[in-house]
Length: 324
Image 1 (tube, one colour):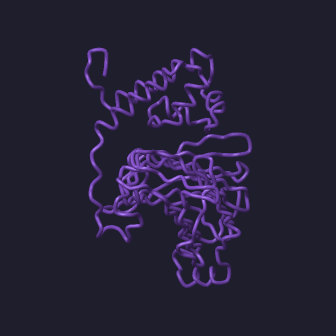
Image 2 (cartoon, one colour):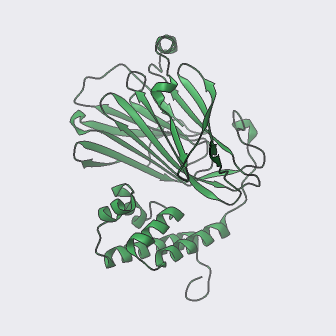
């Protein structure tokens, strides 16, 4: 409710949260970078939050209120946003079975990705991907597992050559070094498909110490990470939106000495590849050059691809990597 007793919209609540965050940061005399570091977030995150490019999240609101000693003011603003969002949220639409290759979750499950943040870092020899996802269960049954996919193709224009390459150099579990956590707990995982250039994995909401399912109405952050050498990766990173997603973020980090440049394209169910509507934002930090791209409410089944080139290194053969 506003001062006149009228219900506020989701956008108004988000603006109120951003303003409250900025006010308390200035009261405490902290820069955006200093606040982000104190909270354990990427330096650009606070800037995105205050500008409205990020939507408020429970974890961010709680940490910001604690670090800034705001006396629950920031937390209450997040509560305003959450109530406005919940009030306007429509029931999930029935799944469009003909458009999906499979229905991986139980009938009573309805997962929504509130925030999806991928960080890919290249050290000159291998790529390490760290994925953080804030999942919300809008269904009627507990969620006990989450499906991830890893697919690489070094020669996308030459399937015979690519197949031969991965038969001789298959992608292995040992080199992937897959790890996953939820609520500070390690998540067990099970391989669903194990092929030379393609892996499908269930991340399980349990471990040897107990179970921690995602119950209806709850939200939780999960994080998983893995590694792929540049002999099996490619100069582009593609994301496929397979679940309703409220915010999608990708950050690429390369050695600045390689002089990387980045661009991207978007492909939907109804249109061919077109340039991203907003460009990746570049920032240089010491020996790293980072590129960040963010979009809100990406279309279901859309594919977003970021490509790069290292101007200080001779171009290798055409390569491709896709992680979803």
